[in-house]
Image (cartoon, rainbow, N blue to C red):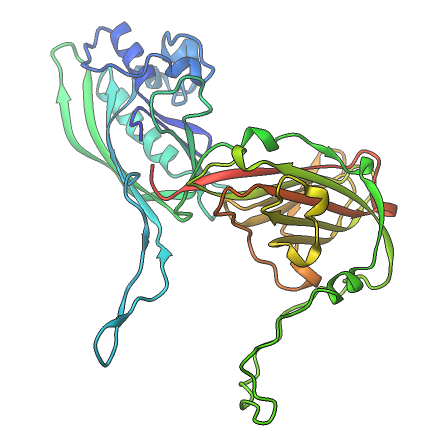
Length: 410
C-alpha cells in the first residue's frame, strides 16, 4: 500500500507530495521522490504554500500553523497481512477441530516525518496531528480511511477504503532533528485499528446508475403465495416409524409484524450484471441507496440472484433468491442507505426547513424474517430485483445498488 497518502474522517493526514513541495519552497532539502501524479489524482492544483493552498492544518487564528510544511510518509505496516485466522481446538483423541475461520480487527502502523520551520511550528504540528488522528467527534464506531494501493493515475482505480477506523496508539515522537537552517523535523509513529477488517475498492462502474422506481413494470404479487410454492427439502434419513427425539426449543426469530398478506400491485425493476464485469478473485458486497421522493414508501423489497445465465427475466424465481432486503416503511423525502461495507443501515429524514433526523431502520429478509448481510463470493453474474408497492411509490422515487469489491490484504 502506498505510504505517501492517508486520509482519515475526510481530513488529509499524510501527503508526501504536498510536504515535499512546501519543504523545497522553504529551503529544506528532502530526499524524497513522491508520486508525480498525486496532486492531480486528488484534484489539487500544484502545491505552493500552506496559506495559499489552505493546507489541512493551516489555521487563520494560529500564526505558527503556516510554519508546518506537511507530513511525509516513511513506512506503513498492516495492509499486506490478512486478518483471517482460526484457533483449532484439540480433541481428546488424536487431531483437532479446526474451528470457525474469522477475521479479527486490522492494525496499521505508520512512521512519518513532520516537517516544520521551527520549534513553535513543530509544537502546533503535533497538536494538529493528535487532533486529526482522533477522528470525527460525530461518530462512535470509527471513521472512513482512504489510501492508495500504488501511485495513482486517475485517483479512482487505485483508491482503497477502510471503515470503522480509529486511533490505537500515538502519535509519539521517536526522534527530533534540528537543522542548521532552523528547520525542525520530527519522526512520529502512530497506529490505527480498523474494526471492519476488509479493504474496499471503489464500486463497480457497471452498477452506478439510478433507477426510477415509478418506471417499473406493474405486477400483481401475493407475498404469501410466492413463498408457499418454495418447496423445502425433506430429510431423507427420517424414519417414519421411529422419529428422532425432538430438539430443545429455539428462541423465536422476530418476524415483520406488518408483512403483507393478500394480492397487491407492485412496481418491478430488474438490474443485471454480467459475470465478466465482476472481479474473479474478490468478494463483493452491495450498497443500496433509495430516495423516496414526495410520498412515503411502504414495502420495499430488493432480491438478489446469482448465476443468471445472462437472462434476468428467466432468473427471478423467488425460491432461488440468494439474498433479500425488505424495508417496511420509509418516510417521504427520506434517503435510505443500506451499506454492506460497514453493515449498517441509516435513514435520513427532513425536519423543518433545514434540519435532518437520522435513524436506523429495521431490515428483514425473505418472508419478513431474519435479515442477513449479503456477500457474493463468485463471479457468476448477478440479477437484482427492486419491488415497491405501486400505490405508495412517488413518481420521483429512485434507487440504485452499488457493488463493492473487497479483499483481505492489499
